[in-house]
Image (cartoon, rainbow, N blue to C red; front, side, top):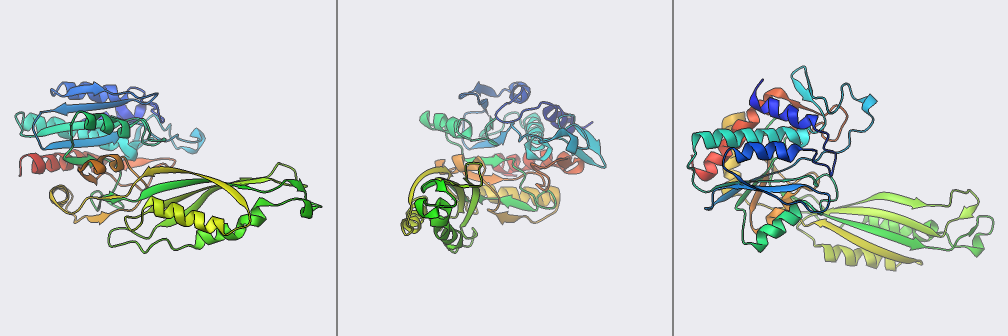
Length: 377
């Protein structure tokens, strides 16, 4: 069994459902210590994080990942136990195989090979891991970056091992992500009997035109790197459980994935302006999960492209699609950030898998990126 396959299976076997790490970071840290990395545990609340670094000189190349996984859902829907990794038909199955324990294993093996070949390499290599990427992402990478900034430790290049590929390894590099803004809206009416609507005020009837206007609003046109901003209602709830009662409150939760063509304050003002046109009272609260970021074509993207051409034989597309990632906490520091990893077709699904042949090529891909960034070859 190859080293990367063996480590990936060991990591998948640990049921690290967010925010639990369940020993994954200790397993990786043990390997890094053997390569003379200085490993610092940085727990915040119930979240496990660590920062490991080899070298003190710039440039600093950081490998970024998360050890937490989403819940597997009903076990009976899986063909095999989600935390008992198995290989079938050239695929490694298990929760986290693609998102992102396969990439974590590949990063560790890549660094081992790189250090063995270049023990006195210039620059520095770091590894930042968290168990809070699939959850609220409050006590994870964001807190580690804050601590690093306070002590003046800045990342030059960040390689995030998220599953960025679409159909085959290396066909896509994510060099940016949209921002994410969530609104929590409470619309107030007046509770009453359904047979006497004149004595009540139905919050849905009062607000339905405003909600429809929010859904129809064109927020921007996007730009050459980002699609237009999208508005989606995620949760809508009202009612008392009885069919003869007009409820007095409607709660709506919505999310906007927004581009660099608009800022969150502008979005908030426009949403409130639409709501203010309605004949109802409301309260609204906001959660900004991350701002959009974009890494321009430069040293990191060119090194990644060249490594993909060499290892995968493909010409990767640049993409900013998908959800958010922990790259949003690193990019504002001035670091160049890319996401490059396995195919994302089965992430968060039942019977999640990664192709064994792609898993075994990933260490070479990450190693070649390191060599191009630190050795220039």
